Length: 208
Image 1: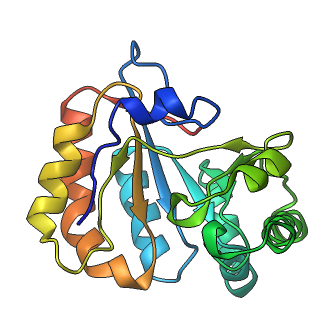
Image 2: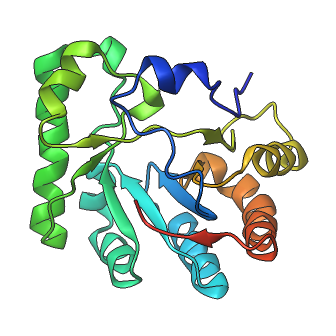
């Protein structure tokens, strides 16, 4: 079961994480996790370019290593880059020292391949312990979300994915999609219609 919208209580309890941006401004913050992945990320970049929209890509370090030119294309197209660990680790299942090491391994490949140092971090699965957060918070803005598309859920139809994502989108929303092979089919059925919706609704997009 996908929880498409983060209940308002959660950001109040966990104030040190970024859940959304300014609710008074008609802006949407599109984010794509887990890439870069050939064909899938390319499709996303093509659609963003077609609609004149910007997004932030929370990349997996090992995928940047495998597809450095695709990662460079993300940057060249004017999109933001965030750190999503090197091996897509679940913080709840990983000792703090190994988790932090993996995050900085991702930073290293971003520096080596892209010449940049990201200040944004998103924990895979949204799972991060207090100690892991404490160790990273001095250097990173830890970004969660308030709208989760659920594009990775094989039990959810593309139509429901689109409907739920549209339903919960509001000013300042941080919206999560995934540019990976598991979501390839759903993305191709949902993303264009969603981008058309936010454009027709008068939302602007921006990087985090």
